[in-house]
Length: 192
Ligand code: GAR
Image 1: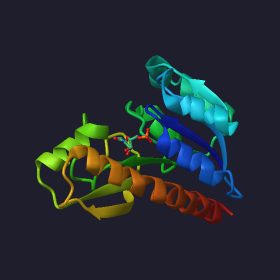
Image 2: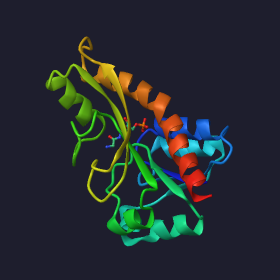
Image 3: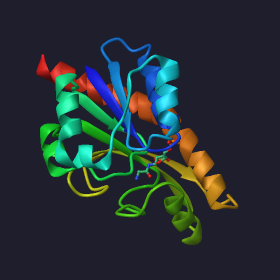
Image 4: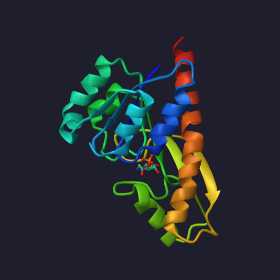
């Protein structure tokens, strides 16, 4: 299966995915794309010897990026801290073939504007006892696709949003690669 990773931030999840899949038979990361040219993820892709691409919001919205992925025969798209909305056409072309990771226990703390530290601050301010991460399919509405996996942690003793962020990120690195691998390889088994 040919996989593209899209990310907007530092790319630590993308790096965890590339690292894991470099030893996974049956999964090849063929492209890492980012809408931010300064995103650390492009450098991480270069270091891993994976093709990288900077694209604009217009290229995403107009279908240019979709065309590129189709030319590269991409089967699966993994969002790893990607902050732009995936357009309808794109969702349709990759129906049930896009996964996202979100740093909360959805449906709590999801929706537009809820990303990165905004999520952890909201969790901290709401004095939640637990938080975690959600891996879910992507559809046309933010954070509403079917949930594949949730990892939970006790945050009742944590003293700041930053501490929550750091613990949740560890959970993301631990589970996203393994869960994505199972989902992708399972989909291949079902086709055969
Ligand atoms: C991760 O915590 C991911 O869950 C979150 O962005 C961070 C990216 O970190 N995604 C969202 O908030 C999506 N709504 P990274 O660049 O170090 O992988």
